[in-house]
Amino acid sequence: MNKEEQVMLGFRDLYNKMVWLNKDKMEESLRGFKPSEVHCIECIEKNIDPNVTKLADSLYMTRGALSRLTKKLLKKGLIDSYQKSDNKKEIYFRLTEQGKKIFHIHEDLHKEFRERDKAVFEQVTEEQFDSMLRFVETYNKHLDAEIKKQDMDILSRNENI
Image (cartoon, rainbow, N blue to C red):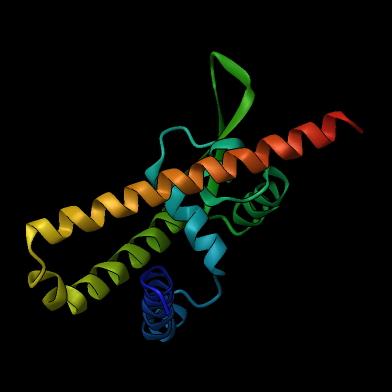
């Protein structure tokens, strides 16, 4: 196995172990909520004037899927929709008090998990962090370009229909 494969396998193993370790606590604390709902709530709270397009892009979902998700969240009373006085066309979302409670539970869980894993990060040097961050940034840019290419391919196929 070459180093590239070792890195990718290592990332996959890390991710799977984190999911496994966090799963029971997440499910117990956020019972009745799907991960997509919780991540949408998080995205609404962390973005300014989130609308369907902004949320779909952030969560790598189609606008149709995101629209269905926000309808569920509206029905559950976790979010409200609003319009700006200068733009009656666009619909934006914000959390209700109940939605904010879910957001804070989720944030507190992540804080707890970071605390659990703190011992590892305390051993990492600034140079190692910088190197890892450069790699993550480079890989993210590559994946963004690939996503953009796929979007362009889809657009061009749709124009030819």
